[in-house]
Image (cartoon, rainbow, N blue to C red; front, side, top):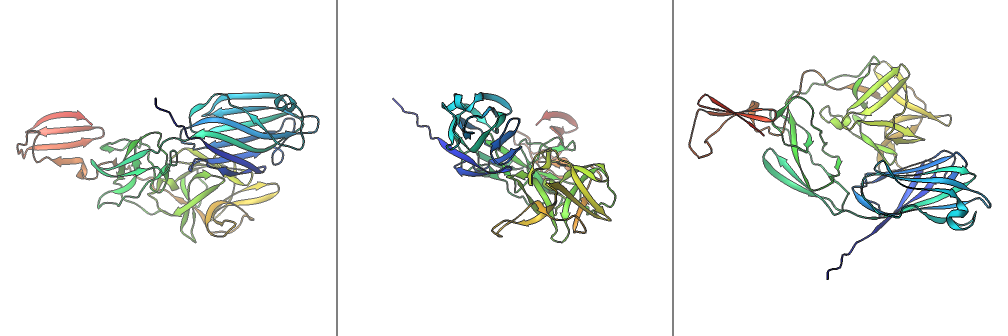
Length: 419
């Protein structure tokens, strides 16, 4: 008889402030946590709400969820809701004494939320809404079964050019850069193989990004043939796609929020990860969206968050600076903030007064129409074949590539085949 050995892991999120938690245990490497409380730290009074959201879980199986709480000396009640992948999977409502046997204003008790395991978790949300003063959250503890490491096979044209294997299931892999050719520049990676396409219908994953597959899969290097053109800075507030750049360091805002922060990368018009759609609703307000993923770029408290937030705008000449106000203080969206240990820098919210700065919105090339392909070896989309399927030489045999189809020309006879 074979015994099935299931290895469980535990991650904990400890409440540090009304807008932050710290991680403990062994959470999936790629995951991020976002926490907010409408009152203060972990205190939830009647009609207050505290929410923990954990994303990029990589398809783990959630085995158990516990919220460590205490109450007032003789009162405290609320409603706990657990959602996984946007679906409600468990709720618990009532008075604290019904959950643990008595009220307790000194010791934290583990309130269990889940009775049945949930497979394929990519994200989860734990929400506590207070119905009677007061409940106090110390930490969240999630027990889970990790997923097995996945393999991503990379292709350059029809040739396999390498494999990337996750360090642990759900950790994802960092996609490599591919060199440009004389006529094509590298645009990203696609999960489908295609010939020539001008529709921009294919999702591209950027080099340097962490790609989290849901199973073993393949990616193809994608190239574009439109020549690059340098553009200037925006001087008139117009809704459109831009790079948010710091001209002093030649850096641009990059990617989407993770753990309350963002990144900056070298300014490169070809890097779609640097492209943001900026919607100016008026001269003082704008909303920002990451073009490649459709993710809103906003804030929660003083942290960056994937939420639609109204940014205030400082604009003068070709200078454009985004900022927000929190508890009567202004914070600017800055690209080179040092962490507390002064060892790394990140993009995020910096307490400062908006004014003259090196911040700009740089135009993104939109003139003309890119042609994308996974096959830069197909010069201008036409190949002369050396032989037919039987190996017979035939100088009058041509192969032309049109999107998802090939057109074979053999001695003037045409044959179409789907890729």
